[in-house]
Every structure is written in structure tokens, then in C-alpha cells.
Length: 235
Ligand SMILES: Cc1cc2nc3c(=O)[nH]c(=O)nc-3n(C[C@H](O)[C@H](O)[C@H](O)COP(=O)(O)OP(=O)(O)OC[C@H]3O[C@@H](n4cnc5c(N)ncnc54)[C@H](O)[C@@H]3O)c2cc1C
Image 1 (spheres, rainbow, N blue to C red):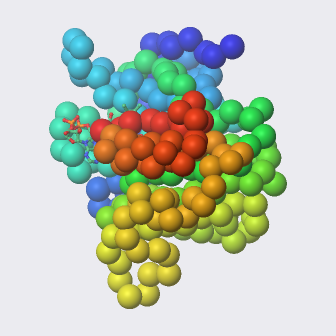
Image 2 (tube, rainbow, N blue to C red; image 1 turned 120 degrees about the vertical axis):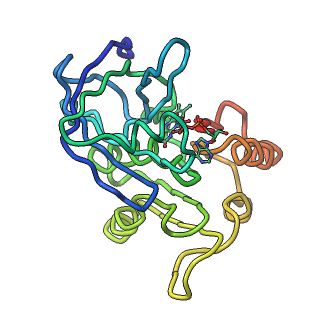
């Protein structure tokens, strides 16, 4: 049974800049002392009546006492400003867990994950959990962004793909220095070219609404059932 959302309090124990505009924070849970959630779910941070921002949980349910969030702070609104100001010791209040963008473990089909920039966060958690629990299960991740700085966890995914032949990682950027060894171009086009059949496939997509809509059109036109296209729209 999915856990019911609870009012939670935690404090920041670490802040890391993964890139100039991408910040990761670790929150040690105070109340409750451990958060029950599924990989891919998110927390809701309140900023006054009817004003909230959602942040996906980057960490996995096997460390329920420390929850990691990761944000792109470039949008610059109230959520970005709040995230930028977090320091070790800051008290954080939120409600969690929410969301149904979670990996269906009992589904034996091939899983394709597609993420646009910071949309990687829930997929990072799902893949980390899969790596701990079922590393031999085939999974492909296509992660796209404007340049390599906008692909959080690039090094971790590259190392995992090297160590685990069941995991395929295809980073794609619109611009990169000459030494870049991943793909170049648009995320949607790379997925369009790379998915030659939708048979036996289930797709998890996270990022901007425009990318989610275009990919859904392409893949459903090739015969993918709408229920086999699962998505989380960040913006
Ligand atoms: C279920 C869910 C999970 C989410 N998880 C995360 C997460 O893990 N990390 C994270 O950084 N954000 C996440 N978001 C987005 C987050 O809730 C905020 O919208 C984001 O941080 C911007 O908030 P803001 O107040 O700074 O800007 P806002 O004032 O809310 O937004 C300003 C403008 O920027 C656009 N925008 C917002 N985010 C982006 C982006 N990344 N790239 C391009 N344009 C954008 C908005 O559509 C709006 O037009 C999630 C959203 C949802 C719905």
C-alpha cells in the first residue's frame, strides 16, 4: 500500500553544487525520523496558501532517514531562491510522499527511461534502486540537455554503464566541446531514431511538457499504448 503523505520536518546536513545552477541537498529527517516512499516520488514544499513547489526525491527508500533533493535553480522563482539559500542546519518543512511516477517492478518488459535535464531526478532514484535490487535487469537511459553541465549524474551513469552490461546510457547534448563522446542533437530526435520497435517496451519520461508531448505523439504513432508511456512533467 502506498504511504500516505505526512507533514514532515527535516534539517539540511549537506549541500553540493553539481553544476553552477544545479544543487543537491541532503535532508536528515527529524519528524518522522524516517520517510516511507517509493523511488520516483516527490515532496511538496509550501510557500504560502495554495503556493507550493514539488521536488523529486533523488535518494532511494533504503536510506529513509536522509532524503536527497536536487534542483535546477536557473528558473529563479520562489522555489529556486529557497533552494539556493539552504545551508547545513537549515530547517525544512514539507509534505511527502506524493506521486505515481514509480517503476513497475512486476512488469517484465524492456524499460526505456528518457529524461530532459533536471527531469533526471526521479529516474536517478528508480535506476539507483534497480541497481541495488536487480542489477541484471535490462534498462536504457537517454538523457538530454543543452550541454554536459545540464546532465546531472553524467559521471555516475557512465561508470554504471561501464560496470553493468545490462544498463545502457546514452547522454545527448545540443552543444559540447570537441572531446565530448556522447551524442549531439535534440533529445526527441535521438529517441525517435533510437527506438526502432515499441514491442515489449514500457517508457518512463520526465522533464518539460513540450518534450513529453512530442515523444508521446511519436511513440504512440508507432503503436505504443498510452498506458505504457509514463511521465512526470516538471515544467
Ligand atoms: C512532480 C514534480 C517534481 C519536480 N521535481 C523537481 C526536481 O526534482 N528538481 C527541480 O529542479 N524541479 C522540480 N520540479 C519543478 C519545481 O517544482 C519548480 O517548478 C522549479 O524548481 C521552478 O520553481 P521556481 O519557483 O524557481 O520557478 P517558477 O516561478 O515556478 O517557474 C518559472 C518558469 O520556469 C519554468 N521552469 C521551471 N522549472 C524549469 C526547468 N527546470 N527548466 C526550464 N524551465 C523551467 C516554469 O514553467 C515557469 O515558466 C518538479 C515539478 C513537479 C511538478
